[in-house]
Image 1 (cartoon, rainbow, N blue to C red):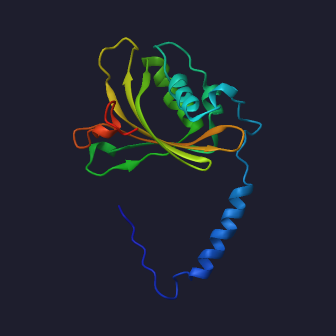
Image 2 (cartoon, rainbow, N blue to C red):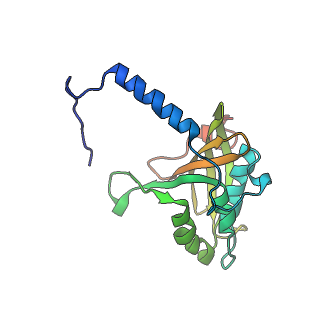
Image 3 (cartoon, rainbow, N blue to C red):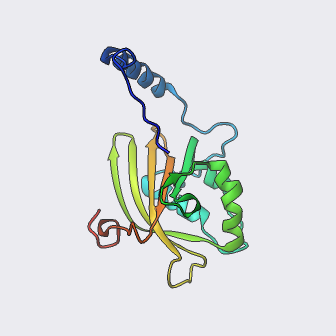
Length: 197
């Protein structure tokens, strides 16, 4: 269901008000903490030294054979406080898509149990990265297998990964993903040899 909002001249904010809000918001955002809290495990510096390193760490830490415990403290250490993981799909097999928001702890405590029970190996097969200042976005194409030796993946898709560097390390801000399906095959530019860079 889509909710539509209509603004009248009386309710529409003026450009001056909007500019003032954005200035205040920017100042507040610049002072907001991004470092690990007392509850958040410290990261291995090698995991967060670069975009390549932190994305590799995300894939590595969730992957393993059935019955193999994952290092969920390592997983948590990669994400900034308040980070989200968001699969996109069709609830109940309907015709409309929806985003499900999962916290880092919910993923580790809930999804993690299934990964460890059934086996799960996810690998990146291609990536397109854009950077501006201390923020970055990666379209990371993945393949998923139950066992690393499986010839064919049971799933493919794209992880849209948002990242930030606070001056000392990289953090994952969010991972937003969509699995490949008949109505949305992965475009060639996001596959190996597709020239997406």
